[in-house]
Amino acid sequence: MSTAHTRIVLVAGATYAISGTLFNGFSEGAAYGDDAQSSTNYPLVRIRNRTTGHVFYARTHDHSRMGVERVGSRELVTTHFDAPIGLEPGASDLFVVVNGIASLPVTMNDRLPTRLSYTGSTIIANDGAATLSADLRDNSDRPVVGRTVHFILGSGGRAQTCDGVTNTGGMATCAISLVTQPFGPGVVAASFAGDASYGPSAASLNTVIFAFLQDSGFAVGDGSEWLGASVTFWRAQWSKDNALSGGKAPASFKGFVTDLSARTTACGVMWTAKAGGSSTPPSRDLRRARRGDDRPLQAQRYFWRRCCST
Image (cartoon, rainbow, N blue to C red; front, top):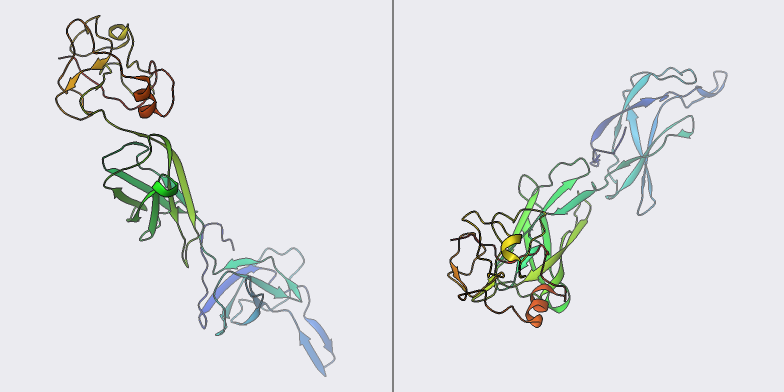
């Protein structure tokens, strides 16, 4: 038997079938005429608890055969055993013993390993809501249902938490209604504590925390923004670096928008800029606060507003 993809659970007092090879050994054992018989050509089931070290023997019965077998026989033999009433909970090793020789152990009453994958947001805006999610599966890639996953956004004293319960697909989701994290690089983590049936697991990913500008923003052409693209937010050649579905931008526009009609990341938001060019660029301190470092904004793929020509 194998436990690579199956959790084998024994219930005290219940009867189970078990199969294998050489369950009747190579010899009947010892005999002294008709005065004494001590046959050992039948299987015993021995169970050892990994935590306590205690050993239990289970009564075997209804063997599929009793005759001794030739060396190297591959015939499959089946027997039944009754799990002892006093069997202790927890991971245990089960052995089949014949002629005093024990088989390799099979794990019983152990927890199935799990794998947790974080699937939620990683580019997260402060002062808004964030949806965190994770996928919980066992070692056979089957969804683990009805278990609580704990989420942590950030670290230290400013960490924010929420909990979600896995659905029929193994997905747990929760929301942080108001994100209040330091700007720049961060981390989001998810963890499953485990229970009597499933082992614990955890996952984490790096995040970027940013904030939308209140009344201005950077613009990126809707024809230049796609997953994996490097984009230009601010430079003298903005109109050459950004393609717009509504037509070419004025050469004097450098990429920084003065006024927005709505605080949103949606394409099509109305905005204005000063006649003859853009408004003045944001300060170095503002760039650092929004990005978490001093690198220039040109050709970086981050989280600022995108625009369409109007």
